[in-house]
Image (tube, rainbow, N blue to C red):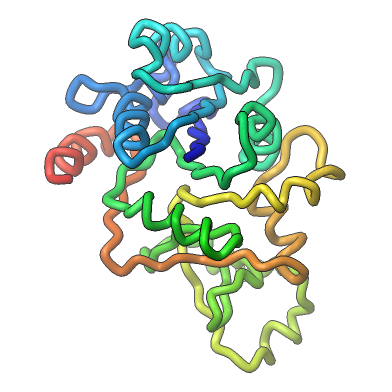
Length: 247
């Protein structure tokens, strides 16, 4: 199994902690977020991990090396020259895997009870990139049809809608569109990599998906039992420690 950990972000919402460390090294019960995720991924059978790095990148490298790579193959996708965002980061990191298996992509600051192995197996069987979603309240939603296929994105606060389909077509689709929140966890199928050839530098993976979802199946997996916490702000650290204690 392959996994990509997104750990390159600046973690500005976690200041002042991230004035001296990357968000991947923020401790929960004394254990850095990146270690929590590496151990979880190793536990479900992941054998190759790539971590993208930018902010205080050397701290992450030194930590992983000091722990003997946690006994698995861990490599680093260096973005110290320029943050590539999620799409550019995935495109660069994909070259570092030794095989063409699907890639479980996971934000380093997300804690959850998600069945990651089940999600990965689903993509192995379907051959379709799949996004883990929930029905949590937010301002930005992905839009899916009744076959779980991605058709667009919306910001309900501004009314903005983005889709390769004309708005009139979206409104007259025979199905009822569902607004679902992306979890920061997905399994990317490598069959989509050639479609990234014309995308250069930094770009959002969601922008990429929205540009091709009328031509290629990109699906969602909705888990009604999903519990998820984004460790994105200082006040979320105490919540994360309680959350992690009950997983």
